[in-house]
Length: 171
Image (tube, rainbow, N blue to C red; front, side, top):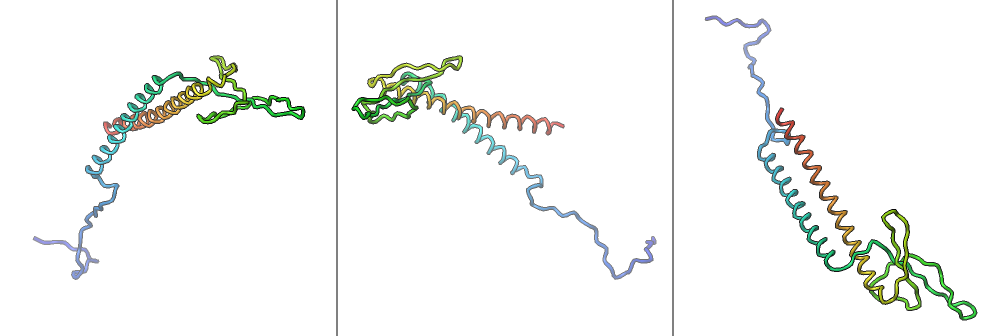
């Protein structure tokens, strides 16, 4: 059996085959990493699900604790004029704390109806505490509703991404 040789081939050179090198970089197929990522996504989604349940429970508790008012309070204070007469200043929006209220002030409750038209009504000193609490309950419910929307948006994005991934993997 004869072997043909190339004229440029020198007998003292070793011929080696090029073997592809494999690395342990992220772009390699790594089923453990894929499974880990799926577990992380699962954990996130279950945490969001729990948060949605907590938001629903908190909303029910707030609503059951009393009246909810989508309104605000405005205050009119009185200045003493040169003649010693009380002069009312214009109403201004105030954030009524649950502490001391100026007994010389006048208050009115304001809000918007379903058509966006402003309504007002006087608010007595005796009503200030309950009205303030009702307004605070409304704000808490509003904050919870905003958080609920954020969480639902996260879940929607994950779901969209998973649907696209599943379709891509089926090809």
